[in-house]
Image (cartoon, rainbow, N blue to C red; front, side, top):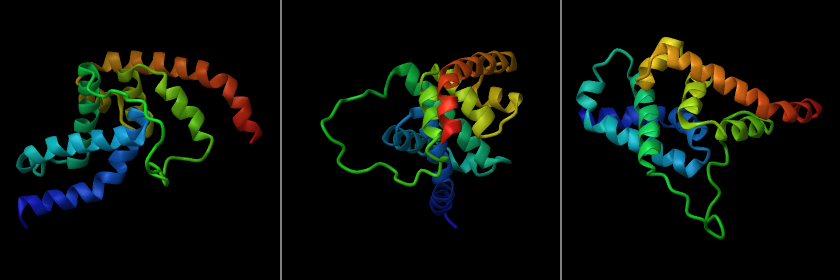
Length: 167
């Protein structure tokens, strides 16, 4: 099998999973799709090396998260207001139920790195060490970012929890 065909199969099998993670980072499906495509572009350029790593899935997630933080630092993602959306974006997201909107709104209010840490730790189920490696930061930074982010989430979601429990 050629490298290109091998990469196509890898990308097709991982796209949905990476898209869900990217959505939690970007807060919108179009930005998430752009982020996944950027990550796949980087993976493709070094595919011969990537396919030989022990855990290519973990490497792909690492590339995704680093692309997100890098783009945020460079402020590549800009919002352009439009009057209407031409098509519905990702109708079947595969991310929870209606109550999940409260959590996604709260995540959107977190700083970029804190959001990435929370998504890696609690959505992707990464350890502190894995999160630190994926984001290129120290384990102490992961712990402090997690602590601050969870405190912010508790504050933001606290009022909404009673609404969720009534549903």
